[in-house]
Length: 117
Image (tube, rainbow, N blue to C red; front, side):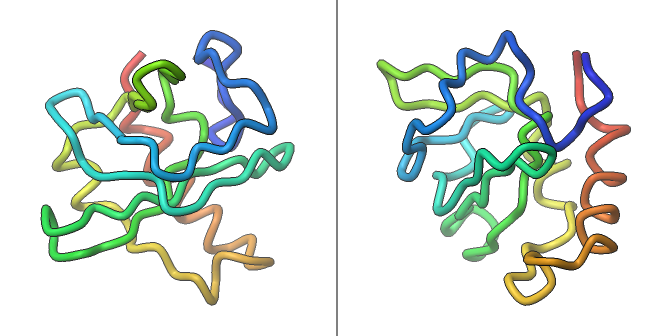
């Protein structure tokens, strides 16, 4: 697995420019929510996932490097994380998200050691 936590792995099946909003997100141990927002920016690709009632409406920022597979036909995105890892992640902060490299570093560091190959 590549060290670039903010880039899609070549094996995910992601086609840049594909609208992923509304896709269901699957952790290694079950469904965690759906994509609310996403970006394909080079070195800053991510998903914002609305976890719904599962963890009381929390939104989480998932770096693209956590994605293992994107199933276009089923509109599902599989990530190399458990539901608990996502539940315990830093909450998405829309104010810090844009332009705060420290925030991205914090989120990236959290996920870097937790992804499963």
